[in-house]
Amino acid sequence: MSATQDQKPILQARGLVKRYGHVTAIDGADFDLYHGEILAVIGDNGAGKSSLIKALAGAVIPDEGEILLDGQKVNFKSPIEARKAGIETVYQDLAVAPALDIATNLFLGREQRRGGPLGSVLRMLDKGGMKDQAAQHMRDLQIGIRSMSQAVETLSGGQRQGVAVARSAAWARKLVIMDEPTAALGVKESNQVLELIRRVRDNGLPVILISHNMPHVFEIADRIHIHRLGRRVAVVDPKDHSMHEVVGIMTGAVVHDIEHPDDETNGAAPAAQAERRADPESRTGPESVIVSRPPTAGGHSERLPCPKWSDTCCSSPAWASPSSW
Image (tube, rainbow, N blue to C red; front, side):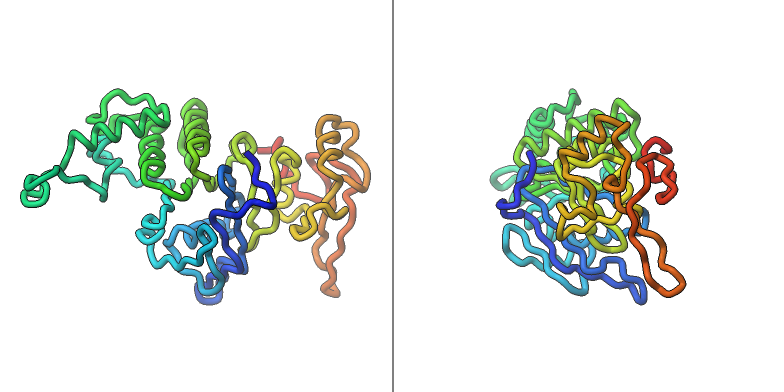
């Protein structure tokens, strides 16, 4: 489901700034996540997207700006505070305990005690209840693991990712953040994780997906947040933009005015863009894309229409084309 402009964001950030000495990691970044969507966050290495996500998850405290959750201003001092507010994060290293079983991993740090004096006095854990609940969470996301007593270290990469996702979905009340969930997985396991992310979204939790895998982003995202040089430079709909255009915006080869997305400097209208993508022969002419030339000796930059649309355009780096990946 695509977010509409009249919806109220569930998570919002305005003017976030984070500096490390003379290095500015976040430079006045804005962010909007809407209910019922998968928002992909992409950017080149060093663009500041990881710092942005850490600020939203409570791992980094921004120097300036504000974060709003359900319209209320929040000031997370740690990831624990973000978790208490209902924000769960699946990190790239999964943060699971390989030697422990699946049920124990799902309740790690949130263990439940048995009722009565056995729990309050002897502090005995309700292992049976936790296994039953863990099995239900796995069934809700259609993760095919037979026994909750199985050690995580015996699982495949995709199944381990499933355990981490199920744990976040089980405890998240507001949203889930996923950092490169398919980075170390094969094709089959990656497809399983993508389907798992859809189920999380369909169960009512919006998802922030950080990824470098552009085909996965275009396959699953409802909107794409493009981060460059510490700030948001564009938010695009993957249905209205090609992968080439998105990579061009991300790398700076294409100039995108986020305040005026329908301006002529952002290329033709979405319908015309779709027509050009469907008909490669029509991808020519000055209206195709606007490119930015480096500043001249006088310090002035020049924006000129690209003379042609091709994967090896003279005005944009050849590696920005998906066909060269």
